[in-house]
Image (cartoon, rainbow, N blue to C red; front, side, top):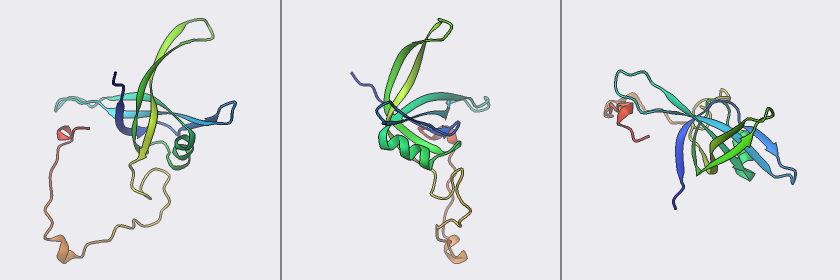
Length: 141
């Protein structure tokens, strides 16, 4: 059976880093992803709960903040739980094997005010560049 999930979106809040009884790190976080809509329809989003472990969890908590653009790859897991008042529920989440930080260094949320290290083009070089118009709906993600 194949069970892989790959999403790209923004963190809805800062990741919650915790430690297990054995001292292992794990982080839970929620990623907002845009739903595909037809032109003229209002945009909607889905909010996907995720969990990751070990160094990935430590790095996620250290280097990302609410609004950071990340890519998540992992497997879907459904679990059952019972609330304090006895009601039963289920949760569907991604157990993340890999989390990629997709914001440019120094430009994401919480970044310091250092100048962008990208070299600037001279005016002369700039006139030979062509612009490309891409509609968001044409992108596969």
